[in-house]
Image (tube, rainbow, N blue to C red; front, side, top):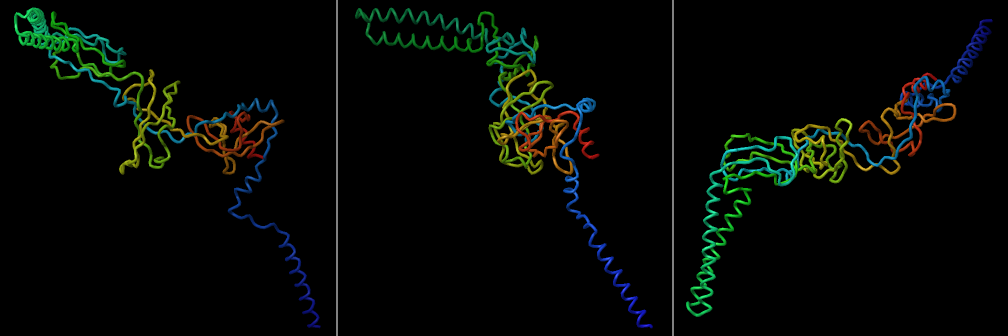
Length: 374
């Protein structure tokens, strides 16, 4: 009897073990932590059914993707300044006293335009010297003509005529030098005044003279910046040294206006304190170009072939991936994209869309919420 009970108990235990084993094999495998994002992506629907009236209520709007020609790299701080060869100082040639100023700081001037009128004793003395030189020149000219005539008649030796010719040449050189000096200074020897004029066309960025001020003949009371171009000087982060090259496109935003230029110089030495190199870009002139103004300088590289540009608002993340919503019949489809760069409120996509493809630009958050809810 005891042996029979033992056999029955063993058989029952075996049956329980078999049933437990079958239940265990039927259970699904536990999720792997590394596949959580993939499972979440798999659970996200590829298509959302959204009626037209519902889309209007959610404020969903779409626009075509545009072909991208440039790839935003970064925006760096910069200062607008005139190029080194585009700034000219206007010096007072002779000492004197300002009798009249004709421009103020900020004025645009043309080449040769008068800036100020100055009264100078030196100019008055130079005018007197020129008058005497002209008088001597007249005498020397008459004497040389008379000596040449006497020499031809054989009355005097040819050497006497040659001496008179040399005296004439000396008088001509003296008068010409004094005339040139007055002309260079825009001086009037009779009144003893001269005029400072603009050597180039541009904007007056410094004007320190007022009527009655003395000038010492060695100062530069006016500075003019060429009006046809400017320069932006900035610091290029170390990570972009070697990436940004001369000729690449740059842009600055000033209110509604966008000014486009190009990189003209990139430093090859990294400052150990700032971990950056110097960069200079050439910019065209404009109302927003003010010397000394701080601005943000956007840098661009050529975009990859086939790249498109869309507003930043068009791209969102789902399950860790960048996606856009594309209008389809009866709703919207999710389209994975590859972001190549971001700048100026737009994203450049290297894959996922073609130029002309419609993409949702407004109401993206509402579509994302619908996708996460399904």
